[in-house]
Each structure stands twice: as structure tokens, then as C-alpha cells.
Amino acid sequence: MFKIIPNKKNIGAEVVLNIKNLSKKNLSLVKKALNEYGMLYFKKQKINSKIYIKFAKKFGKIAKYPRLKGLSKKYPQITVVQRKITDKGPSFGEQFHTDSSYTKKPPRFTMLLAKLVPSRGFGNTEFSSQYLSYENLPRIYKKKIKNLKAVFSSSGPISITRLEREREKGTGKSKDFKAIHKVVKKINNRKVIYCSPGHVESFLKTSRKNEKKIKKFLFKHQINKKFIFALEWEKNSLAIWDNRSMLHQATPFNGNRIMHRITIK
Ligand SMILES: [Fe+2]
Image 1 (cartoon, helix red, strand yellow):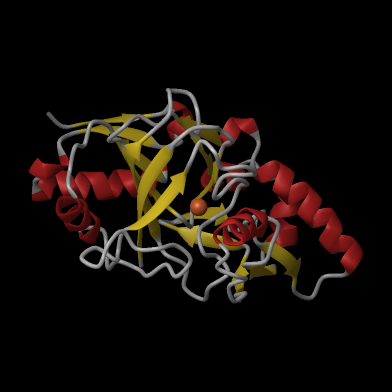
Image 2 (cartoon, rainbow, N blue to C red):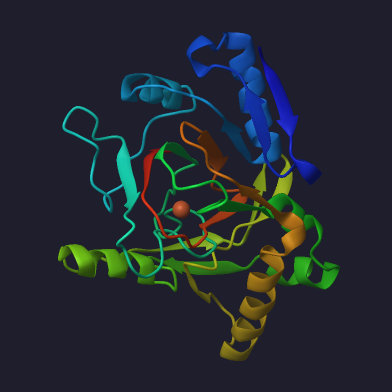
């Protein structure tokens, strides 16, 4: 069985297949779909870490993520995103962002495999298509941000979730990272807005007043409901997304959840 079912307005797609039996031909169709729809999810993938890593490697080299602990000595490439029912405060990644945008070369793809989830409808991950976000930008703004560069920082607004975790675990404050990227990128011949509301601190060569104005407008525009798909997690669902064309965020929930995360260069 192999089927690609695009979501409404092509914001992500479900892929029906058993990833253990992925042919070369179907892999190239999956890659094409990932470019086109920005995110894909595969339900009912009861797989072990070895198969998960093998699947991840089909999309590129696995990246390191220093902020989370590795699953084990054998599988340091898999990091664990865990929330316990007793955890207070926001979940990891709660605010729209694109992963590690505060580094020079952010990971191209991120994958999550749901190992333990609370009841359905809790703790969705929302994805916002930045293809649609750019396409729907008023012409005047397309012009305004054409050559705009932004400073992305790991101590941006989203860091509150990380600081919270660090405080709880007593691991102390980790190093801050900063990077500069162009706000408009061309991905697969389509333009996207590459601006992470959770990380963007400032714009280069922009007055304070203008910066405030652009930020306010862009951050709101980028996460317009019309561009969003919410993934309802089920145990053994696997998702992969392109960090350049999609913003994502965790939504609040209380319960026990364990995700296995892999990022790809
Ligand atoms: Fe994230």
C-alpha cells in the first residue's frame, strides 16, 4: 500500500505506507511530496530506533542537537522530547518557530516519532506553510522584505520553554547562539518567508520604528489560520518537515508524552 494524501490547501500530507518496505521509487515520490507539501506524516509506524535512524538517513546526514539528551549511548542521534503530567509551564517548542534558526546552517528537516501520547486531540503540533504565507503577502510587503536580513537568537521569545526546562533540571543556562539569515528564501523554486517568531530578535539596516512595524505585521501574517495544519498525534505516528518552508509549534497540554526527535542536515 502506498498513497500520498495532501491536506487541505496542500499544507502537509499523509503518506500511507509501511516505512520498513520503502522502495526506491516510492522514496523519490516521498521526497518530492516533502518538497511540495512541506511536511509529511506516517501513521502506525511501530519501529525500533535502528529502523528509525535508517529511515532518517534516506533524507540526509543526521545533525547534532546539543540542547537535548541523546536516547542512549547506542543512539545519541535520537533525542528525547518528554513531558510529564507533573511538568508545569509551557511545553518544549511552544510558540511558532523554525528549528535551530539561530545557527548558521539550521537543520533542513526535523523528524518526530511519537512513542507515548496522551489522549487524542491533546498536544497537537501545528504547522504553518510559509509558501502560502509568502504568496499571500501584500505586494508592498513583498517589496519591503525582499532584501531584509534578520538576527535569529536562541534567547528569543521561545527560549522561555528551554529556560524553564533547564531550571527544573538544574542544568544551568546553556550558551546563547545567534545567526543572520535572509527573510525571503527560495525553496524548490518557490519563495518562502523565513522568519521565526520564536527566535527573530531584530532586522539589519532597519530603524527601530520600522522593525517594530514589520515584526508586528509579519509575525501575525505568518501564522494566519489559513496557512495552518494541526497534526493530532497518535502513538507510532512519525512526522518529518522542512524547516525552511514550515513554521511549527507545540500546543499546550497536560499529560505524559515522549517523542523521539531526529534532525537532518
Ligand atoms: Fe521545534
